[in-house]
Amino acid sequence: CSYCLPPPPSRPKLQYFDMLTVTASSTAAVAYRRLTPRALSQQIRCLNIYEYIGMEIMSRYGIATPKWRVAKTISEAEHAYSSISASSGSKKDVVIKAQVVSCGRGLGTFDSGFKGGVHMITKDREQASEIAGEMLGSKLITKQAPRGLPCNAVLLVERIYLRREMYLSIFIDSSSQMPVMVGSPFGGTSIGDITASNPGVIFTSHVDIMEGIRIEQCKEMAHHLGFAEGSTQAEKAMTLMKNLYAMFLACDCTQIEVNPLAETHDGEVVVCDAKVNFDDNAKFRQKAIFANRDYSQEDAREVEASKYGLNYIGLDGNIGCMVNGAGLAMGTMDIIQLKGGSPANFLDVGGGADEGQVQ
Image (cartoon, rainbow, N blue to C red; front, top):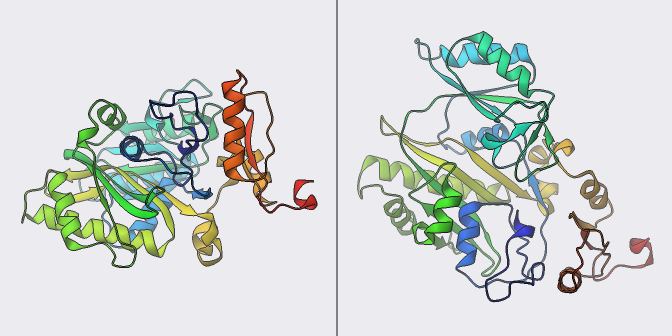
């Protein structure tokens, strides 16, 4: 995630002072940041939501997604499967996804030993019931969430037959303090490996916050994603980019990461999976969105700290840190690291903290 990004090669030991604190984990965004100057900026806490909530919001902005249903019980999963499978009059395969706020679900493992947070249902309702039963009520362990996160719901989605997969995201670039659109003609689960070995496949376009996203930017990005200029698919991709940016602004997002963005065999351009984060500072005007917050998906220590206005991030070391100011806190953590220690946490009590705040 963003506060654990690797340091630049020229300063291999200073791990924490080089933290980027604006957006959440994003593999292609990480590759982009490796190519740009790093900047220390104010930490912004971000609300993470379930995938199905993000898809629900996208539909309000005219962004194409597959047919889907969410289920919180085995019985609901059976009904959801039947509804999607027969939606076109002929039986369809259905994908079932564990709903936890973490990347890498497909390669994760449940604490019960069940492998994978994403499966294909190709048989019948009984198979849907069996897989849902393995997921619901268990914790999914991923690379991003090594302690596991509880799976309280599953998302069932119609299987999309892809012609190709792409990557597209919009997030706030901390260096320029501007929104940036990042795209790649390669998407899917292998995007991390692709961008690490060949960062040249990552294309970026900064957006002037006053002017908004321009048609020329969308046209250029569509070209980078591999759409033929003037084609129907290119027009659909450009419309999707404009709608994503409209959602980004209207909903106070800090990140919208689409992976994969798919071109289907019948020429549609569809968001198959997306990670959406929102700025906690906008909670007062995004009450409907923030009502979906599930604290079971967050570190209990960070949740408790946020009640008192503290910026806390738990780490794996054994030396506790309590510091006034984010910059000084990260510098302190670097000193600990340089001297052979390991910080147990990042804790910024605020540069203007009083005695009560410290207590």
